[in-house]
Length: 300
Image (cartoon, rainbow, N blue to C red; front, top):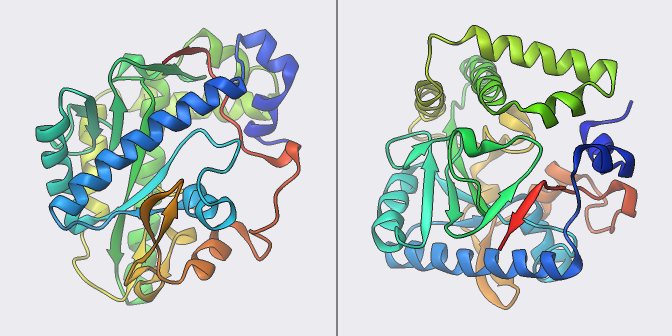
């Protein structure tokens, strides 16, 4: 069965919806902006002695390419729960003239399911136009790493509720950001259409709860466990259970270079990357398997 990514990458779909991929020059510009943003984030973390790790595709890019995956247009970062509020408050204070900050808590200017740093003066709009609920510039997601219960039964309950809350909050956000383009895209396939309609129904049914509250409740729930031997990144690409790893995988972080800039990665990077991408994570995927993010509007 074709995935959403498969349909988005289809040239006919892109033409019909007015989507396009960045040119080589635009991609280089985006990567340069992201690297500059990362340097500012790293500066704050070192200033306050906070932990920040490369995660996901950025950790993979660091070990496989020495920096960005050549076709990648984002940077994935991880900050542990204990450091996130101080990071957000300090970053806003020092760089508020340069960036907008969105997050589940009051540490952000507007609510968001995951903390994001948005570069002011830029515009990057994709299929779901988030300008209805916040800034839409070139941005970096900061995924929060949380302790989770050591005991399997409480951990299972905590994880199931986390995934449900994440699904509900995302459905609410999807409903708030729907537009003619997203309606048209999800009507191109019956399974996509049913998926989309169900998510919109769920989002619309939650009219009595604000998006801010849903993001905040999710954030509070995932932060309940204060210390344990296990960690998860509930908003990661594989969600709560797929991102569940022993703390020794992450700590102590290892230093390496990302595009010539100092960076930190999980201590057991092999285990971390195998968990996300499988045994052959060092193999470069064929063009048709590469993740892509076509956009509608781009202003750098």
